[in-house]
Image (cartoon, helix red, strand yellow):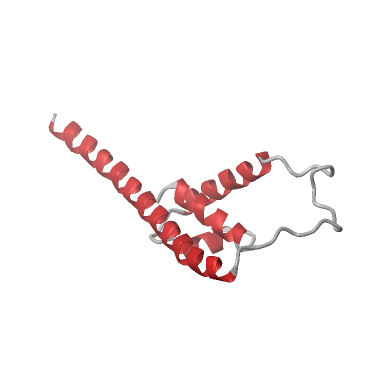
Length: 115
């Protein structure tokens, strides 16, 4: 399991308004992942979030500002399945990357054992 997958899950949780934690991330992983990798991925995600500049008071929205209109309901209904599919595809790509890394390691081990 790649750190990108862990970080992606943490981002999804944050987008849902939930505080990412090791337990929440592990519950959403598509495949088992070592605990140190989950912790490292969560730490990296948190450090990325900390490096994003916070809104300054001059750019922060004021209470009297008119809220931006949301997407029409029919657009939201059309976008939701696409967001779900995108998240699924990202997880699949992360899994494939992990498999490639594992296969490369196995090839190196096999070639060093025979060569």
